[in-house]
Image 1: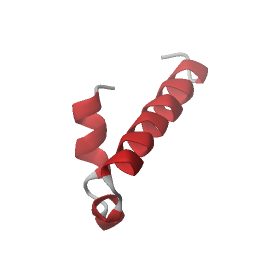
Image 2: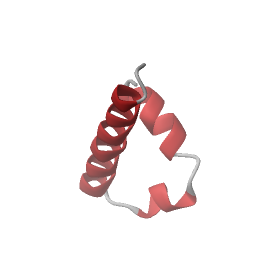
Image 3: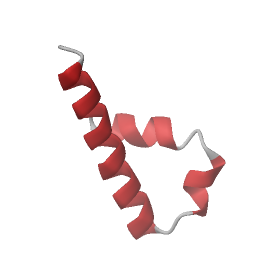
Image 4: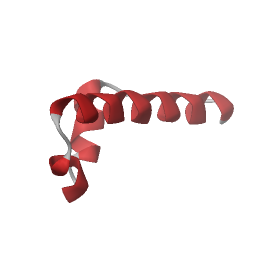
Length: 44
C-alpha cells in the first residue's frame, strides 16, 4: 500500500484531521505496517 492510498483511507475518518502533522505521519506509518503484516500472514 502506498502512502497516498493510506492517506486516502485514513482521511475518511474525522479523527484524522484532529491530529497534528507528526501524529498523522506516525498513524500512516503504523497503518502501513499493520497492513503489510496482515497481508504477509494472509499469504498475499
